[in-house]
Image 1 (spheres, rainbow, N blue to C red):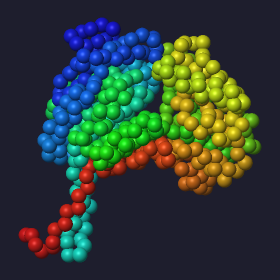
Image 2: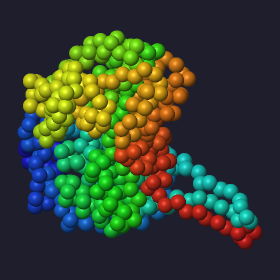
Image 3: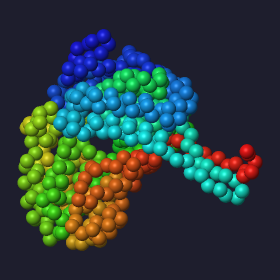
Image 4: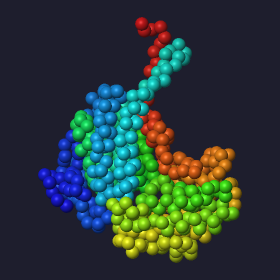
Length: 488
């Protein structure tokens, strides 16, 4: 860690470890350590916000809101487009820092993840500008539905893919006319700090976009409880989501949350087994730290052995190692505490007598690596089936027919995503309709249309993001009614 005029160097890139409030960098007396999963070294001592810094950020957002809202969608769009252009111009810098900070594969960050942030800002700028107010006549009145920017929004993002997920939430908020206070996760805060630099470079008015760094129990709790906020958006665990929901409810603040998943990957006997097995082995990508992953492999009995043989062949192709190397396909887990959590799930499964088919231990490659693991549970009620592990751990179960497949798919409290492999269009439609999840992919995975709704059912979350669904969330809808003939 090298200090440069209040900044540090991470992967050779200058980054501020401080907050961004009212268009200025603000330091805190207290700090927390940011440790790279790749090296195990402290790469930054980051300003640790308390109630005072959070209050300053929220008030800055509140003060900036009227002028930002008054610009209208067309007036705000140029700012978002400039920001998108700066993201495109800084992909290498953003990718290098995020790789060091949370250990996602560098080639993935370069090729698709960081650039998705630019797509988010462009897409929402254009969607907001293209919005057509609904007009109709009824009971002698002319009626119109109008969007009013809601106010200041708190955005709290997780430690996996922090840059992309921060843009995914802040883009619709800003496009809708809200001002933002972003709190990234303390395990991977630095790419969001770079995002604040790009916001400043794009010429956003001070206070429209603010970043507070800190620990969830302190800064996060103070933020969601602040009475001046009008929206809260969160991605994380159901346990934290419940606490945030209580705080938001006390202030009658609308709240949206994406809270993880335990997605089924269903393989029917008429599927392309090579494609299905390859995709199943691909669920180990990013060390399984993907909320949308299909972590429960449900395979039709008649092809189970054939599928497993192919699955093992593809899983054997994974190469654990330094995520900065192009040859690496399997990265380390984010933090020792998270490794301990993943280990705990597997050790409890082992103690309960579930069969460890492959893996099931820490990898000798490095201190935060865990072997790609597959477990055959002896009960569908087992913890390893029912709870999100968020690591490179999959379960394997079989079914006889469609009804049993759907019953197994819908047997957890989660409902974020599902994946179905079949060669039948009719089955794709039938099963796709019956699987309870916010998104179901058939013969593919992680293809996202930014205008489609995104969110979960059950304990996977409340509300929807994406397209006009997100713009509506960050707006207050108003019905304007004018008596016909009363105006010129």
